[in-house]
Length: 287
Length: 241
Image (cartoon, rainbow over all chains, first blue to last red; front, side, top):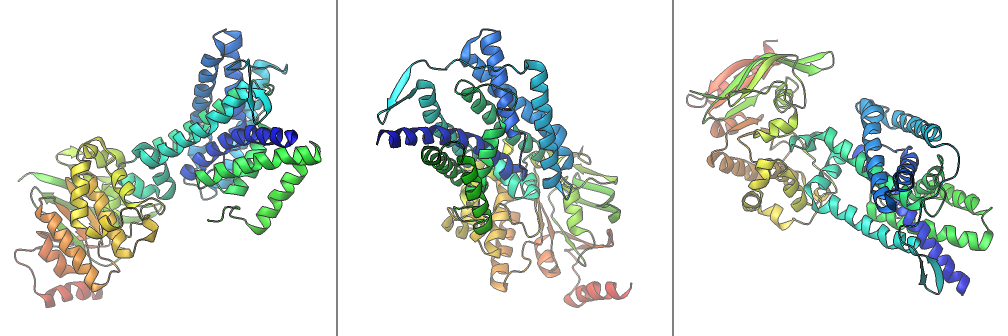
């Protein structure tokens, strides 16, 4: 019973992480129709900047995390401007941007290696101490991640549904000409979507940096999981994406409990292949 | 008389294909105009060029005395030059109420949003009934109403409607024509693209016949040609080529 509850909590932590990651991918996808392969690297940028500001400059984890979020957002806007925007009117935009964002990932990872070196780094916990949930003990920092993730998702959802600025992102994703004729600046909407998505990745990375190690390739494993999530939930609907994120988090946690770490990725990818074969539009139906 | 819109020698097209060949039209203050002519001869391209979706390769566009030839759509919309494009599908998964609120995007439009949304619902009660439905579920006529409603939310100083009754049943067409006439009566100048010349004559002050990206004829509604002459214009002009 105790192992079961511990697994539930661990699934919740993983689900929160994947939800933050995949919702950022979803924002870029619904606005630009681009899958951003540098999303994991942007997460790493957030973690490294947070570490530098917090530990090297000594400004503490709060300022560090805020700086990491902001820095990743800015890098995202630069990636959009230099590596995505030139290909908007290209017929093969999806394929080309897959390659250019992969290139961005490589550039960012190698760049981080050059700037920060290969030694493992870790951020301090944002909040010290431990918390007991469902009879298991986790760090207060992980508990914060569990609470923060749904709050951020709801804020993001409200932004895209209740504010004109947020709605403009959805509008541009569905019909660029109609949006432009309402006075929406399409390139600004693209940059904003990329910036928000990258900032979310940066925040996730900075929070993760005190649970796992901060390394140049720390983003690739969460990005792979986020890809499984979007294959399960689709990318068009924030709610479905978030739901799938928690589902994958729980599945992963229980697989680790039942099969161990070694076989878990194997089963997850097998599930992904099955979904692609039989429900190519995602488990939660729809188009 | 001052000119509201003044277009001179406009040339534009898609890639190597030039559609507008030195087209010149104007609207004086206080009047509305209609555009008609065969399909594929540049009427929609003209509207797309005016609203900045397409950049002209030659010629000039001035609105209220300001040169807007090289302006981008956001600036043109902010100036009040609003375009409801042909077959506007808008945003499939956005609800009607949301879409109308979004349409008041420019600063000037936002200030008038609350009043204008009531006016749009009064003009098109069907939209008011379907506020919470997404645009995807609307019929062709309702979608056209939403498109015009959005254009009104943009706080137009000049409203360009591209074939607002295209493909609609006679009854719906009448309903929309009546709504457009109502909009015109509130003092909003119009540029209307339509195939139905008699509808245009009743609605606007002057008509331009556009062919091969040029104005080939100008007609004043005051001394309007009769039905037969209109028919001759349409089909006779075609035979001439």
